[in-house]
Length: 197
Ligand SMILES: [Zn+2]
Image (cartoon, rainbow, N blue to C red; front, side):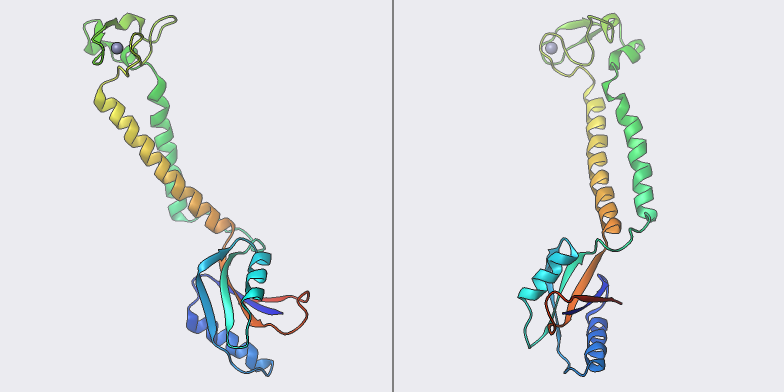
């Protein structure tokens, strides 16, 4: 069994030319490369199995796979930028659990009202032992101004989105996505040869 491994962004024309050259060199008739765009295999062995079940005399099947044998690449500019933004959001979000009214007492006349149950709460007890923190001790509603809560929610949302992007970028460079093309199904199945182009 003979295979060629090529980068994910290789054009079909280039794959075809590579396979044609390889088959010509080994005195085999040219065959069209047939890409499966919907399947992604999670290892080289899985890709080899997949190609084994799709081998025929009419085409050279090709499937995308995560090549665990390739050395991971370093992070690129976008990933580093996302990391910086995540760090800055982490710093902002750290303030989320600090007692809000303890730090903003000067804007009050010593009392804040719970917008939900209308209890009047003494800010001198905000953030102290046996006092209250950010939630109403009577009805448990969040006592911080709506705009402050919304701001934290937006940061949190932004944080989660960026973290997802960072994870995607990291996975991609740690396990590069390649095409594996079956150039010839001839030979013993245990005899596997992969050429990287
Ligand atoms: Zn309340």
